[in-house]
Image 1 (cartoon, one colour):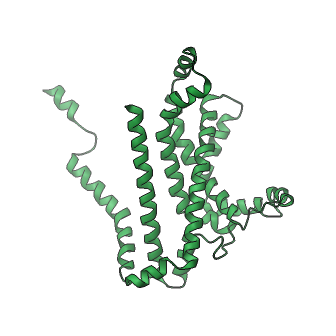
Image 2: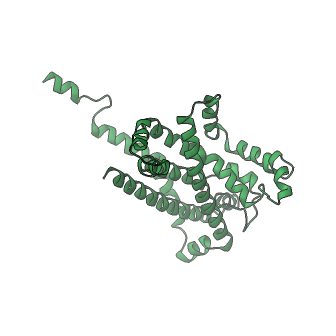
Image 3: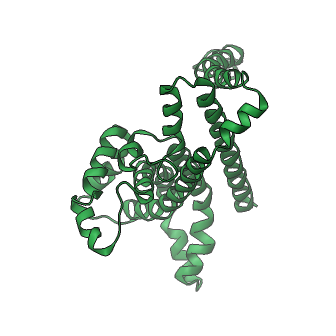
Length: 278
């Protein structure tokens, strides 16, 4: 009896009390602000709402925000996998320093990151000066937005993949090689199925982070309407013009679209995880 009672004890209080605190916290931090955005938008008529969210300048900002975020997420998924693989599988001098540098975008204020990237990639910057003779312009261009979003999203992919790679036993690869599998077959049938769910998770996190980014993009993009203006900047512009309903309308569109994309990615992740286990 005592053993049963001791094993049933939990450090946190009972389920009902814990669930109550959880729902209250999520309601105050997440649901209440999001509900306020929807309520503020409800003050618009349908025609006003549709006109606001489909204006040519707004549509151009959608294309840049979602397109650059998806591209940055894809780049981070590819290169983040390589970085995580090297950090886990290969010992080399300075590995701890490189591992710490991966977290730099987490700790660095986004405005500082934007200023630093602009200084480096401007036409008179270190890398911008080298790229200018090649006809490549990064700062104050769409490419600069992609660079900034890739910079701030890389740690999400690397830190999501690292624990899985550390738990992936090298003996599985050796066994596959012993059975005659080539390197490509080992990668495709042994390693990649284990890495696909966390890779999709890292991609989703990097995409979501990039979609709401503002500080690092506002400096390097140049903020040119119809070209390098992202939707978060357009929301700030409307707020500065005291167009609160228009700003919340754009925020609602971004919220619904990002939630739908994240739901799709999570569904694909669950499906991939189910296929791997089956």
